[in-house]
Amino acid sequence: MFSRQYNYSKVLIDYECKLHSDYDQINEQVKQWLIKYKLPFHCEDEAKHEQNERAILISKFMIHIFLVDDLIERKVPCIFFDSLVNHGNENYDVIATLDKCYTETQTPLVASFADIWTQMKSLTNTSWQKRFAESYIWWLKANNWERKNDDAKRVPSLMEHIEHRHFTGGVLSLIQLSRDVFLPDSVLTNFTLQKIFTTTGSVVCLVNDIYSFEKEEAEGDMNNLVTVLKHEYNISKQEAIKKATELVNKEIEKFSLLVSLLPTFEAEINEKVKKVVHGCKHWI
Image (cartoon, rainbow, N blue to C red):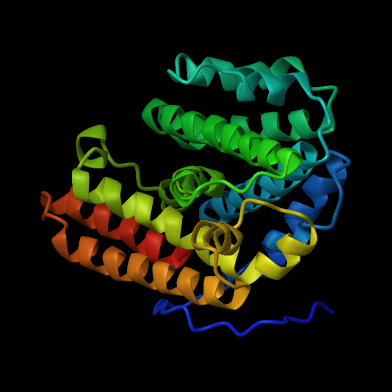
């Protein structure tokens, strides 16, 4: 069992964490999906019919993220994923770019992604698909950037780390999918709501940095908030852990402030926005 060497202050997250009421059923279906595509089983625990269909799909995608992350870390070449990493930063034609997964189905990880992508497209609109495709491509780019840092033994600056880190979360767009709530672009571009999304991603990823620091340090990972703060301010590891926790707690305070600043939208849209914000709280 992994034993921690340092003291960790409390992260002030005041939101309840719950398992899905049909967790066992969802877990079993995800397990069968892993068998179908001959994927490894080590991530299977990440995991009313229509609601469960969405939960199962999201569980599959979460496992997919872990498997692709491992692929990148081990530098295993794959034409499809490599093409996404090298896709232009202008985000041109992103849905068609993801559709290329259907041409490489002899690779289990790509074939399983094609299955996920097909299900996602059947449950969502084109606007959501475009945003998801953009976030997925940028998640791959950010992971590739981290791998290059590790290879070069380069600790990024604090600004670099924070700006790249929220891309590596990779799941923010799933909140709307999970709740079957799709906000129009006119609402999604609201400045306060955009800040809520960004802050949510930062909190989730940076909290993970804190509690995975010792494990990642042992593995030689350069891309961890604690490592970055230690390097940036030339402080001890214990001081860096404390500073990282303070930074995250300020982000959580900012999240609460932003929620209080949200405008009131028209009736039906306002209820949808509330559901999405609740999803952000649940993710945190």
